[in-house]
Image (cartoon, rainbow, N blue to C red):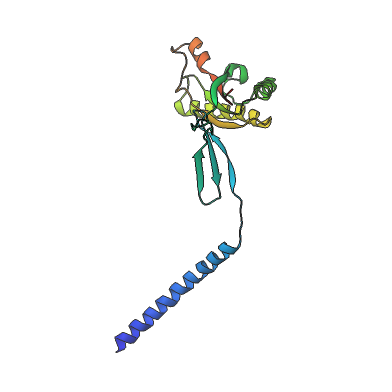
Length: 192
C-alpha cells in the first residue's frame, strides 16, 4: 500500500512537471498561430551555368525552384560569358587588396556600362606564397571588385577566390606569374 502511494505521488509529480514544461510551449504555439511576425524574402538565384531559380525563405525553411521558359518548357538560362579579365598588377599593389588610384573609377565605368543581369567575380594569384596566404588574398581581391560592382547597383551572384589553384599560364617564371595574377568577371546576360 505504501509503495502504491509513493508511486502515485511520483507519477502525479512527474505529470505536473511535464505539464509545466508543455504549457508554455502550447501557449506559445497558440500565440504563433495568431501573431504573424517576420517577412518572406524572395528573389532569383543564378547558378554557375547561368540558369535561373526562384527562391523564397520565410526564416524557418527555404524553397527554390527552377525557372522555366513558358514557350519551350526548358530551364531559363542566361548567356554566360567572361567579360573582363584584369591583371591584379593593374588593379592592386603587390600583396594588397586595396585598389590603386583611379582603378575604382575604371571598374565603376565597366559595371555601369556592361548592363549584365548579374555577375560572378573570381580572384586568382600566382604560386609564390603559401596556399593559405594566396587563397585569402584572392578572396579579398574578389571581394573588393565585387564591392565596387555592388556600389553602382550591379548584382553580384558569386564572389570567390581560387588562390593559385587555377593558373592560365604554365611555368615558374615572371611571365607566367603575371598572367596568373588576375581578377575575372563573368557576365550573365539575358538571351538575345
